[in-house]
Length: 321
Image (cartoon, rainbow, N blue to C red; front, side, top):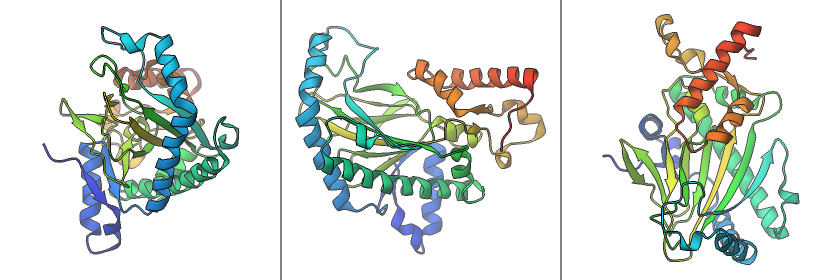
């Protein structure tokens, strides 16, 4: 098996641009994941985000997590647990409307920092989407336009801590799943591993690299590329010792009313059209996903295809613009 793809984005600006674009293409087609270095986000900013996120967990969330674990009896389980994750999380919404000023327990400096961090991640997300467009032969801005819907994309951040777990063989940090949305950018702990993806039937570690940003593709990009790129199942393995693992995942997703469908340029011959992915409104997909997140994605696609067929028969095809 080839090693996990780590891509130096700085090389896009020089003689190795073609080779770097090919590496991105291969990662999207064969891994659904890659790791970016020299991505343009200042290291000093990332260091401050890591420091303040870990301080916030210790100050405001650690005792709450331990109490929750104790109350649910998870600190003394004797058989595998399949309905809960060993993680402590909070969520920040950025688009279409921000909730950063309303999230409880955040210091003002941390709010300001996370707002600046989100701005950098949003910019990098859009730059990466345009690189995907270039590799796919789509016009620049195509994916952003599809994601935009009538107002804006949906963009938010899940801030997670995975504390030491006494029974990592019985409880996952985060159960295996694919991500529902568009493109996901992850700033993860560079000292503690735990993130794994499923490739060729085997779980592969995503290596912790200092100051890197891990990128993975969600279900919506699989649909828009008509399966050329795939969303990939991944999970987090809990660790028994140390300080725990930090994970900050930002999700650049379609707007709730965005209509998602395979890009016309990526649709095959007329005879193959029955094999195309479905057309649907992103909000409808999310309603289904929320109930079956930790199940296989293929039945979700089939359910949306059945819904599309019903709508076409009853009211005509969904508008695409």
